[in-house]
Amino acid sequence: MGGAFAKLEKRNVDRNYQLVREIGSGQYGKVYEAVNRQTGETVALKILKLIDRQEARATIREFNIMRHVSARPNCHPGIVCYYAIFLGRHEGEQRLCVEMEYVEGEDLEKWWRRHVIQGKNLLTDAELLSMMTQVYGALTYLNAKNVAHRDIKPANIMRKPDGTLVLVDFGLSCFVRQAPGKGLLCPPQVSGSPAYVAPELYADVNHADLDNYQPADIWATGVMFYRLANVQYPFPAKNVDVMKAALAACLQRAEDGDVDSIAKFTAASRPRNRKLREVLSESLICDPTDRITAPEAMVTLGQVNLG
Ligand SMILES: Nc1ncnc2c1ncn2[C@@H]1O[C@H](COP(=O)(O)OP(=O)(O)O)[C@@H](O)[C@H]1O
Ligand SMILES: [Mg+2]
Image 1: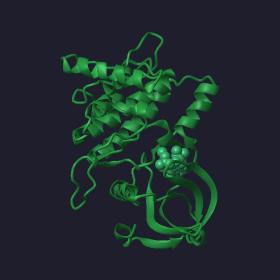
Image 2: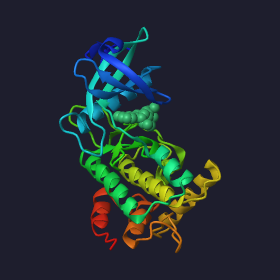
Image 3: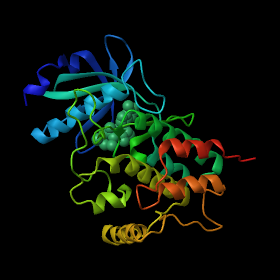
Image 4: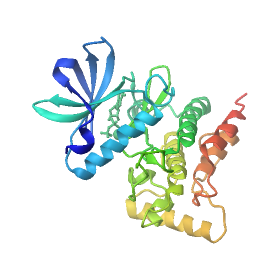
């Protein structure tokens, strides 16, 4: 894999860290709770498998973006804080590793399944306001950095016991504008979990339009909060084809001149508050150029008065 990794610091994972427990495991590798033996600090350690060149490039992109948006001591409270990136020897092999802030708690998907689904506690407007303000706030910060996350979903947001939300997993993120000296522009591919992918990304078969990616994060955020609030997606979701057809029809209506949101609310829907609904509704406008932006959402959220 050489080249791009040659400059990285080398560490021996097993000598430098005590692996406490595996927290998450995905397609790309594993995340551990670990103790840095040198500092005594509890950290999260993401250890990535490197399968091929393309994946190596994607990993370099992830790490460079982390450095750019969220390296200690300049971290945003809603974005996981990165400490170090290194080549680590682990289980007899070289792995690409990132040491980052350990976020206590569980991811939002797990918390929601336990609290809302099993516990039968629908989210209140106060909970939704707090959660939305945090996530749109983190996206406002990424906006200013010209970064698109591209995998916004509850499993990529950690929830601390006090309700603080922290965005993790920059594995698919990229720059929507050329950053000085960095060739990390968004590559032409659809990315993310199908249910959270915006209509224009399905429609733009060449994925050439970089201006689509930040609005697509807003779309995914709208899908996420609509689902968390109403325990159903804002579109028919029986299977991916049905969903894609609904999104394509909505985009078509938008191209015919209607400003059309896929989110429909009834008296029984959540959130109840008109301004909170407005943010979700405008996040789910099918035409990306009409969709609300993160800073605009923050203005509307700032006007919410739950009495
Ligand atoms: N900094 C962290 N602190 C605590 N848990 C984390 C942290 N980063 C990731 N996780 C947990 O590990 C899981 C997988 O991490 P993620 O970065 O999303 O990797 P993947 O690319 O495999 O999805 C997350 O869903 C989350 O539950
Ligand atoms: Mg993930």
